[in-house]
Length: 346
Image (cartoon, rainbow, N blue to C red; front, side, top):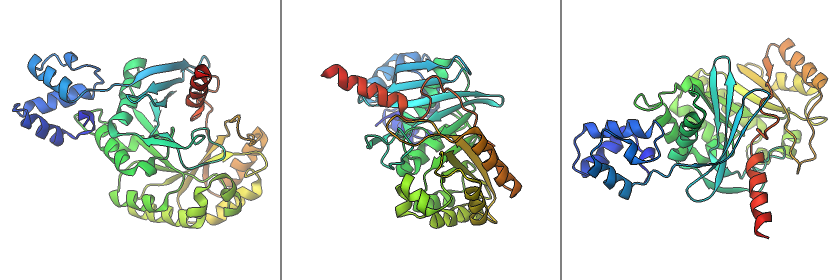
């Protein structure tokens, strides 16, 4: 058991079993959520308690394997090594409203999207709540920059790790911890319909970002295998139910792929299908993945697509490209690092 995956009441029970006074729980909880790497840093705890905790509940902080900072925009990308030797990526992005950290929720991914490097090699394992929290905490500690916003859009499908992700959200939202508002958190999904419905029941005030990436099933089937399990009409119906339950507008992510999904006619088809659903489109210039034949749309195609959506009454923005000089898109740094490890053992 890792104490950082526990809520404050749960941690209080652990310390009660160690015959500690009730106020110790908040002390330990606060220290853990500051990103300490060793119990000896908890200077207001008795040494005997620090030694007991270290023996029974190791902190297991991640190690920085790679740290790359963009010379263009200051974006920082981390490759963290976890306690079992697996690696995940985290990206810190700077905006005028604050610093956003994009975290991974799994080691690898089993969704198989054709344009994503994260899914190459499949799913290794799901991250524990404390490991996701560590991505935020230690990015903040290492960079020296306060994190105000979180995006669950790194390696992995968050809703495929539902219970652990929900626990992470509870922890990072905790007033005694990082106290990051749900309204400052975005969760991205490729479209696991039953989990979207389950998320809706919780009525969290986060932003749900749905990776749509296609105007219809014919296109989506080719680039997103999840569509064969949950066709786009089922997904859009789930989005409508989500909006009815939460009153939170859906954000649709749409990777602009040359000759695949980027015609004005595709935008018009989207307008017809999303009629009546409050939505925002985040148009994403495709990040090139070496193993994929897919290419990014031209700037003219992106602009024409955006204009068609906006003329139809749907807000559409083009995501600003950050960290293009440091492999900042999901999975690239981890993939290259793993390839190098394989080559080094030959």
